[in-house]
Picture 1 (cartoon, rainbow, N blue to C red):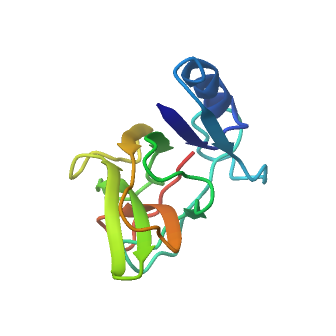
Picture 2 (cartoon, rainbow, N blue to C red):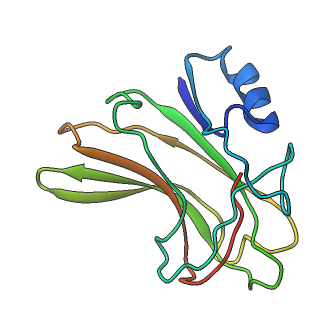
Picture 3 (spheres, rainbow, N blue to C red):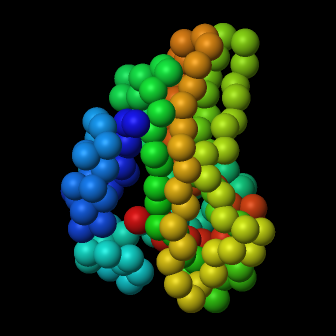
Length: 153
């Protein structure tokens, strides 16, 4: 199995990589930017997502050229809503752009009201793609609520 870890240079990502490398290749992504310190699951920083106007408006990562067709990747993110945000569902989605149109593949998701402002929840799933070569692969975190503010790490 291959693994792709977003935030691989952080405390959690690096420890996860140490464990997964025993099972196969591990690809790490981390932009090493300074994130928010208000809601860090592990380490000292996280990404705060606010000002959203649609469910799909969330942090995204272009992984075209990073992922290989036919390989299976484990994708994981810790998520939490900001204080005062009503419980909702968050999910990890892969947008696959093909000559025939755009596909949206759900990689992992919480229960309908599974993410709250009280604690982090881990979303984890396996992802693989086959068929036509995509012209775009965009991994992102979205919400059932168009306006929920959250902090994925």
